[in-house]
Image: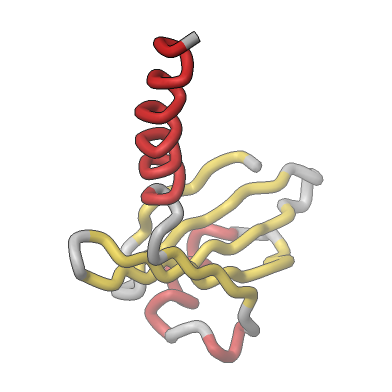
Length: 99
């Protein structure tokens, strides 16, 4: 019984540390198209093709003391497929993935 209790006393705080550190400093918010920087709008539009932009999220995350902003656009293509376009605040395409 002592071994089990000791294991819980040691393992639980370590588990909590790793679980919470993965979410530290991350902020997501839905934004309007008008609030998306022009260079980001251009990249999203180029990659959306004939698709309709349904939603834009702005994610700001702090990594190694530096703030990083990524814009995620959820797009519905004319064939019904959905994609997600991720663009950095500098307008560089990060990823296009099927949703």
